[in-house]
Image (cartoon, rainbow, N blue to C red; front, side, top):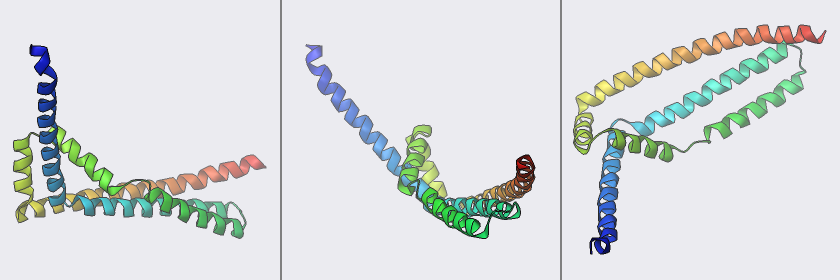
Amino acid sequence: MLARYALPLFLALSSLLAHGQEAAIARAERLGSALGLAETLEELRTSSVDSTKSQLQSLINELRKAGIPEASAVRLATLAAEMCERVARSWDAKEASRIYAENLADGLSEQELAEAEAYYSTPGAQKIHQAISRGTAKMVEYINSRTSAAGEAELGKFLAHAKALRK
């Protein structure tokens, strides 16, 4: 007799759990919106493209110094710009936001999500979050600039060694 009710009970519980998870994800999405997730993702896309373009331009400059013909350098610059655009379009902001929301929903209870949403919807919390985000962005900018500068210097040395090996 219990077996006869097992499937309907399982389906009803699954539906409730799914609805609960959907509600938690919706709340997490609202929290992401309060935190400016869409803007952060766009800034991430832009800075990633800019960083990649800068690194590729350094590579092309080093290749020029190593003696490749200018026509080849121009062609490589065009290919690099096209590559940067394809890389920038390789991920979807809506999908990234969904993943973010699902992980918030998995890591926080409904009550914690409600409290976080209420807190981060206030002007004071948004100001704090923006300051933290700016600090994080400046830190990442520093790391990227130092990594790019070191990479450019090391690439020049590497290409000089490669050129010496040709002789």
